Image 1 (cartoon, rainbow, N blue to C red):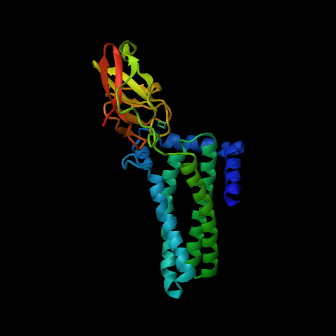
Image 2: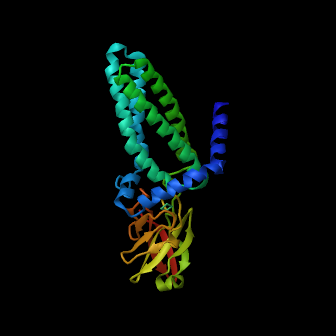
Image 3: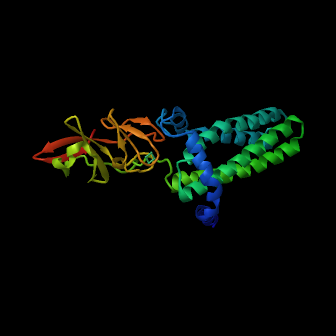
Length: 287
Ligand code: FES
């Protein structure tokens, strides 16, 4: 019964267009301050790490606050000081966690942006409550500090649930190539004549769609489906350095090996071997 109630709640949030009045301008402002191509975007996305940064950072405040709660409940007098320090540590660690989450959230649209907005509201509420709890504890008001911590735990539970929903149910920030692999054997995907003029061409290749581009007499092929959120790379820009920029959120990949040059993507694009046979272009997954 409980999961059904939570599903209904999440669907209501996703459909609540009224949230856009606040969420959309905020997301636009974040994107303006932190656009793709900036070091800050790569840093906050986790492009340098090869893994989204935000979920990794969430472990620190959540771990600190859960540990503090256990000490509050089971640690007795000797656990008080450590509990107080963990409450404060969690509140400090929540700040970079929130900034990285804001960066990820600014790339979302529609229902996901609304769910992410409420996720952020829950977490900001939790940080405020834990911050107040810390100061209450410092003033020796332990009862009030514990009550604020419990309220904070409720807010972070709701926020965490919504964050988990975005990832595990909606696939936000899950590498789009986690399950879809291109063909291991050679398959015909296009006619060589279609690639004249250097215009990128997209063609189905097994479960994937491949982006084909002729550069300097060579045909290069990589998955057309952006690893970040599935954007169509053939609609993006290809620059002089042989890099393609996704039209959706501006991730940039090297055509020859699929490596991420700029985020928000953190995972590389699969690349394909290319063979030209009798005017036909064939590809197979590069191993
Ligand atoms: S889909 Fe987001 S950068 Fe490509």
